[in-house]
Length: 254
Image (cartoon, rainbow, N blue to C red; front, side):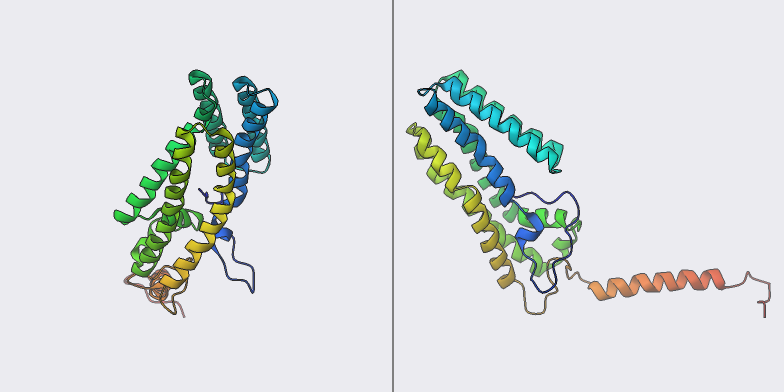
């Protein structure tokens, strides 16, 4: 799942429409997430299917990825969660003695994510809107725009579908103990799927917004962006007049 940038998203480059990939990123993090499982499979195979060899390779790769992410400025909490997930997956595999159990956390997290995205749409807090709102520092202002709320809800179904697809692929492979097939599926359904979901959900949002809508950065509330600016200017003007008005009983200076 893509994460918002650490700071407010920068303005879009001139001459090119802004996309969800610009606002959320996500593809780089998805690539990072595939490295520990690939390392696990390589270590497992190179040590004659030794579970300890696979786990050691995965933890080393996860630690290296965490260090690289910290150097490039990712959130420490996000980095630690990613590393913790690798360590927990390794402990589960060592505990059960089954190499396929290294992917149990991945299977369960995708089930939970599919439910979370679906429920978010039902309760009218679509997660895609929450993520974009965080990236643009809008808080909940986007929810006061009915067209934007509807567009985010439709886009969120795209992301819910990606998790349902992963679950449909991962569960049979996990139950069958297909370790190498799980690794291939993990790679194929991580960064390529994230890139496709970013593009498709952006297309859904654009087609859902009515003609003339100012876009994701400018939610249209009941008062409207222009009215909000006029109200702010009126308040500033009124404050200035109040400061210039002489006290009661005194004549203005000429």
